[in-house]
Image 1 (cartoon, rainbow, N blue to C red):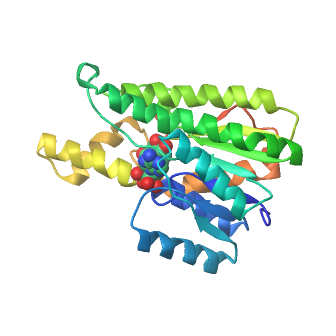
Image 2 (image 1 turned 30 degrees about the horizontal axis):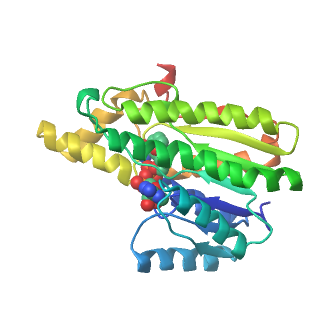
Length: 260
Ligand code: NAD
């Protein structure tokens, strides 16, 4: 049902973003990949998506914490797909765990630039064309941390709450135009971002990786990590006509964390 649509997914060389790219391609969307990583591996990923799903796909790099790279990403995407971006998934991000007293200001600023300013900037660049076409999807990969806090994650929690707010604001501005804006809020998903945290805890507490993982997952009543496919299938749903009236809202997929 997404045949002919173009989806730009930031941070799609790994984890959730890669899963979302594959899932939207499987529904027929052409894909613009972005993110860091090994060039050869990225080329393989793009080639496999093109072949497996018979869609067009391209990779456009750039450090999205930099304003000029965000602009360049959008420009290059338009030169490849002159019809513009139909689905924007703001996903690129990273975590930094540190008590407030020691939290480096430059890291706070970089996280904000990547996870709040870039989504604002890309949404701004894409929304006009979406409105003109009368259809568009802006999907922000926020987090359960867009609704609740955890210690030692001041920047992440503030930014994820911020993107939930940005989602609401964009949604009401574009309501009735065929463009929706939603936040998808995962609990813990076992991606490199999560694995690093579990490894750090294991090292610090002198426990195994599995125990570190269990320690992190104690906040999720299910006791299980969310699977990447359980997030990417929600993105596909948000792109479907069944979700035409879902806008400004959060879809929370967190094993019961925020209900607790
Ligand atoms: P990941 O580390 O597997 O992937 C992050 C992606 O972002 C990679 O492709 C990376 O190259 C890219 N990236 C990082 N810095 C970038 C930059 N400056 N410019 C461009 N790209 C950059 O992590 P993930 O777990 O898949 O995280 C994806 C999103 O999901 C993030 O926004 C994260 O906050 C959110 N999230 C993750 C979890 C989890 O438990 N894994 C839970 C809730 C929300």
